[in-house]
Image: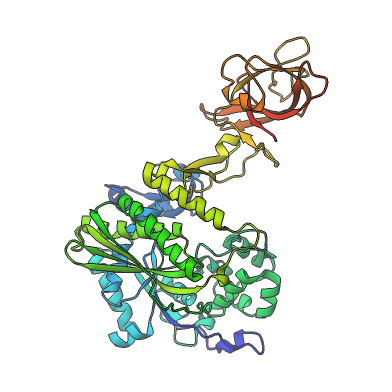
Length: 572
């Protein structure tokens, strides 16, 4: 029921028509992350107040915590100060995805063919199920009853033209009449774009867009539009589509289309002559989600190889599982862009965990999984989603990927580790080693005052080797409390012990090197208000052989902690 009587066409620029959109039903469980965290923590339901954190920021707070002054976006320390008795929980994406299978299965009892947009939200075409149930109101009632009866959770349903309008309508439990989605969206604040149904691939472009470079961020786009005076979705929809495309690029143009009540045109369907699918009979059967990840990896690689051989990519995947009791379960996952092998492994792991969770909770007859089947439902030519000419993965990268997969299959997931940036002041803290194709850790929130500007050293030591820094008289050089050097550095000595990591760079144990130049020391203060706080100082040095008139010079980054010098990194 849209507010107002202004026709939708009047909200658009002259000459532009209201975009066509599929009649869509959105089902969401409010505060899903908080519900999943409470399910994971035994006895949490009895806590006086509950706070859910992600990256040390509040993302959910129950009514008691909100009444005490806890707000979304607040830092952990401030939230605990406002509500000291609250139970503080951390998000767990894998548990959220697995547990949400209970909701998806409940909706499946009313209408088959639901698509999981993200944990907490499912989308489905509404026209056919509504006709079968006797109307859209009756369809919404049946879905709400099914979720409540089978899971015990309360859900909300919204129906409208297009997925974006349906998602916002679900927040209010509304059914928007056909043709009125643009009118319904118009008064919403521009911040509602945070709910836009864009997948993890949104913002990845081969060329920087006008808004910024690299990956775009919804918060960045919302902030820019607000500063430009675009404060509602109606004002965004009133902008000419060609101007938005030219000024902001294709990513923001997609948001503009959603704000007008439309939906992105689905990719052209491609139907190969032979069906593309991968089937595995599992012996022994799957009873744990970590077994699912191990089984899914070769299946994802095989599926990817079949698609590459045909010049196709998959944007929508159906996962089918069969159990010991003969039950067959299936779920469809949609994705914004190509589903890579790593994406497929993640979704199989999440899905199997959800099916097994149903069995553990006694909410179904699901037993051990004996078969897995992967069926791509939406295929498109690879050229429509190809990477850039330079920097794209070629045959060499694919061979390396197959070698890594074999190594992990033989020696375990930890056999191949890759660096993942997480943020920090010290170089060793900025990168964490994680298993190849495992879920990357979330970056720790910055900023990081005192962090080293680029260019960074090419070699970083996980355990910095010790060195001695002396002045011309042979006295140790230290950094004072005011951040000044006690004397001009003249000599760097490598001690006889603990210099194993420096040998490869020509810094042998017991060697002496002249200091040819140095920068100004930079103080680092971390958590100075706590007993475990760290205080250090950085110093960039250029050194050369003590007895050589010329020769090679070496630039390194020295770190002073508690009066002792270490080599944090070496420049190439």
